[in-house]
Length: 373
Figure 1 (spheres, one colour):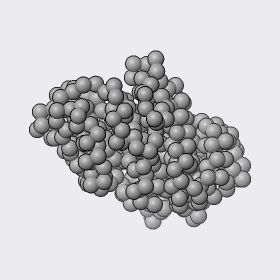
Figure 2 (cartoon, rainbow, N blue to C red):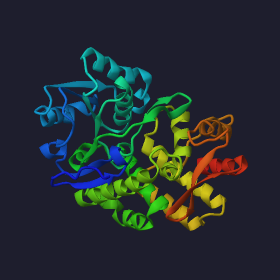
Figure 3 (cartoon, rainbow, N blue to C red):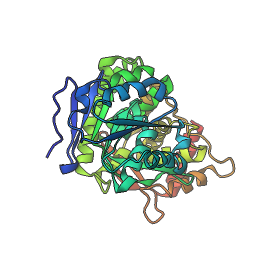
C-alpha cells in the first residue's frame, strides 16, 4: 500500500509503510494551498504547535489554510531553541490539549523546525495514547530529515533524543517559500543533513551538491527543490525498509554519534544540530579512514564540502582536563550503543555506510586530530 496521491500542483514523495503510509508534498506555496490538506481525517478541532520565532511569520497563514476544515483551531507557542526540547515544554502542549478539551480525533499541526516537530510528534504519540498529526517543517533541516520518518523525542541532560517514540505523521508539507526567511546559519545547518545523503547512499547526489553548493547557499529555488526532493526520496527508501531503526535505517545517523556528543557536551543550543552533525561527519569520515575503509582524498573532499556549506569542521574541546574521555562517556549513552560499546556509522565505501564498533584508542586519535583541526 502507498500513501494517497493527492491532486495538487506539488511534487510528492511517498513513505511506504503499509497502513501508516503517507506523502511528503514539496513545492512553493504548499502551506497556503487548500489541496495540501485534502484527505486529512475530519475532526471538530485542530491544534497548531509552533514557537515564538515562527509564530509571527506563519501561524496566521496556517490558521487561515485549515480553519474551514475545523470548527476550532487552537494554538500553543513554545520557547524557541534546542535547550527547550524538554519535559517542561512538552507539558505545555499537554496543558493546552487538556485545558481546551481536545479529544482523540484532534489533529495536531507541527509548525516549526526539528524541535517543534519532534515534540509535537511525541505529544501526538502520547496524548490519549495517540492522536493524528501533520508535519509543517519551516527549516531546511526539518524538511530534509527530522520531519520525515516518525522519530519523535525530547532531550535529556545525559543524551540527545533519548526519550521518545516512533510515531508517523499523516502528511509532511514542505513549503519551499518558507526557506526565504531562514537565517543563514540555519540554512547551513540544514545543508549538513542534505550532504549526509551522498556518502551514505548516492554519490551522484554528492557530485550534484558539490556543483550546486553556491546556488543552494543563495537559496536558488530550483536547487533547493531538487535538494529537498532527493533527500526525502533517499530517506523514504531507507525508512520504508526499516521503520524502527533495527537495521539499515541506522545509516541515517552518519556523523550523529560524534555530533550528539558535541551538542550534549557543549550544552544544547550552543551549536545548532546541523553544525554538530557537519563536524561529526568529518570525524566519522576520519574514523572510516582509520579503519581502512576510505582514503584520505575522500575525507578531504567531504571536509571541503562541509566547509563550503558554512559549517564547522574543527571539533570543540568539551573538557580541558580529559577531553577524549568526555567525548567517549557521552557517546557511550548514544542510542546506538550496545552494552556500553559505542557503535559508529562509517563509510564502508563511497556511497555505502555500515555500522561498526572501533577500539577506544582509535576513536581517541580521531577526537584528538579533529579538535586540533
